[in-house]
Image (cartoon, rainbow, N blue to C red):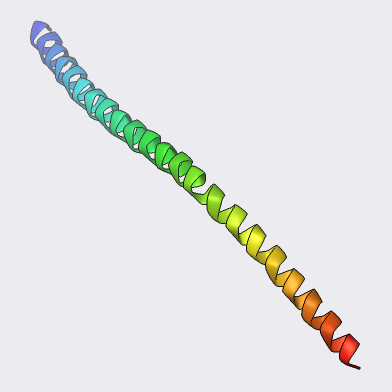
Length: 80
């Protein structure tokens, strides 16, 4: 009976050691993924800030194109 308990104890001890290793691995993976996520969020925020002037430029260019189109259309009507 003591042999069985000793075997069971070793089995449980081995299982606990295995689970601790798995937990450490998962903890490391989680830390790595969180680091990657934070880096991605930071890059997204930086790119959003970089993108703002381009969006403003696009709006200005669109207004200029509309104005030129309207002016050209008005000129064409006046020529009729």
